[in-house]
Length: 251
Figure (cartoon, rainbow, N blue to C red):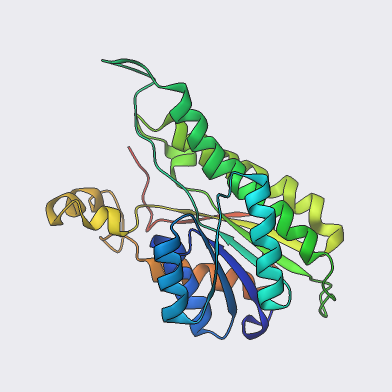
């Protein structure tokens, strides 16, 4: 897909990996609609960058359907989705205060996994209306998994389960949507330098970087965005999960 003609939804696009991706795609000539729950940040980002913005709860069917329709109207169609919206919930399965709160586990699954699928399925319905290009392609969906899907740490049962679900649905979704000309990929980032991590301080960032093989640092939002753009542009990437982690294997 020619990135300059892409019409992309980026969820969680007001900050973090989603924000970096929205900015990068815009810099390459794509149209972008930011999906985010934070209306203030989303509207400010849209005003600054020229993106469109839709306030949305990706885990809610009606909210997402309304936002997808708005994105289609604003951009004249949808050809790409990059799902970055997500939360991190840390708690032991059985801790000093009792078992992991079930509501917290459910919320993590609802936003990270159900939310990603919800946006993907509704956007795919719009993509199916597109005229195919020379490869028969009508669209591409890029979901965000995590190295936690494979190397989940203590206290990450909910987060790891949600990201393993994203990794696991890449192949069946790609098989489902192949006849429609829609590719499905996932990126599994390692530890990236987001505003949340920056707030932990330099000593903690150094500690988190110690198991990265090379380069010995945390990933940047632009590095994630560059891979997302490459996937959108490359017609032969499909049904795969790409680790983006500097060789990190979490202990």
